[in-house]
Length: 445
Length: 80
Image (tube, rainbow over all chains, first blue to last red; front, side, top):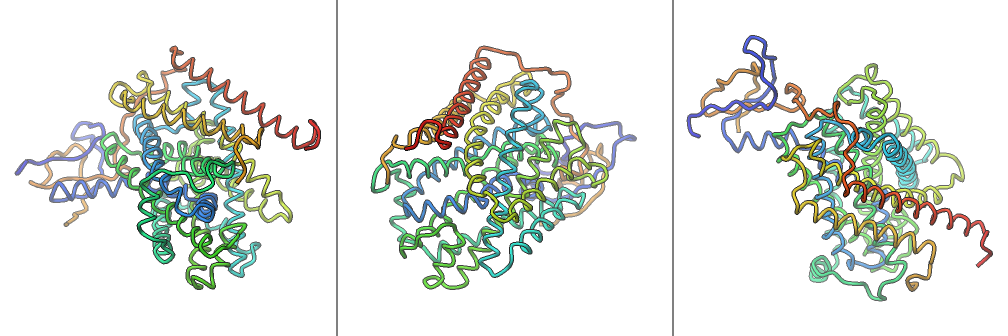
């Protein structure tokens, strides 16, 4: 290739005199080109993965660590390829169609399934937003700040993040917040259990002492449901469509998604390790904020404050991603302009949906004696219902040759892997439902 | 690594020798995607029908289970 000039652009080409002007950067080497292209494409994959380590995830992983130490780390390792395979399909679908997931379900499966998917997504998303703000309220109150100040400030900040009329500005802020989660590695290192046990429990699947109990099953299902969330399918596809990723960006989008998956699982493992500190010191807690407080005599104020701030960060990340997935999905189905690249006055419905989600969820949390436990239960039930159905639609769309053509549909091995994941998710969902109906299905802890 | 910002005609194929021109997706001309506007509902092949029937069955079962649980909590089936 030495001496050969290569122009990089994947868009259509007009005549020389009509060609539009395109801003770009000139680099001198292939590796620089690849690196720069990756950095330009990077974002949706990391955000969709790391935003999944939201307030609910912190709670779930910390609880897992507090109950079972590091005995469930192997489950996270299994979930790494699982969430990557699912999101990789979303990447292909988003790049090939340039449209969001809700729009595709509506178009290819008809109005009934389209409205069902949309309604379920909006419902579970809204309830999840309430839990995010509940976590913010909890964390700030443990920091001596009134929730009546902390929650509205968070809501305003989340609103301002998206109102800039620039997708890139929102993405850079959100990526920065994602990278703050590196602090979990520092906390895990500070609280680290023995390395030998850590490696063994990560690589060797095993059942904790006590065997398979109803408590363990609930936690396993909660971990799976936390790590693979329905909103992620809708969010990443819409995000890719909004960012206008090109066919040539597919490899880099896959790498972005993979790195995001690795980072998320590592952070999740660190949260679990943080929870083991409670087990080691014999601390019983109702929530991670209380755990952070109770750990202070053993680990110091810095770790306590770090956990509280990271809880807030997790909730903020979850809120912006989930609210956007709702706003994008609703805008797609309604046919409204729906892009972060548009100013507010050109996409009023889109921004109004986002702001309404954030404001309503924040307001509910501030109501005295709001039924937050019922809401948390509702989230689990609805998420358990929507996830298998969302994954089925995704799988069917990725086998739709009429839609994607031969090049982008699933290969046979894709289908083997994905149908296995779907069957396991269905089974877990039915086990959860069966446990609710028959609490003695598994022995108690 | 030396980046040189440049504004160039899209159609221009003459980038300086041994150099590459990299465009951000948001700055690039909108790419032609799969045309979905002419596509209606997905053809109902056997696998699609089976999948959707299984999904309907699963959802009906889940709704019944949730309904049963709510009735149980409300004490309709007697206290435990």
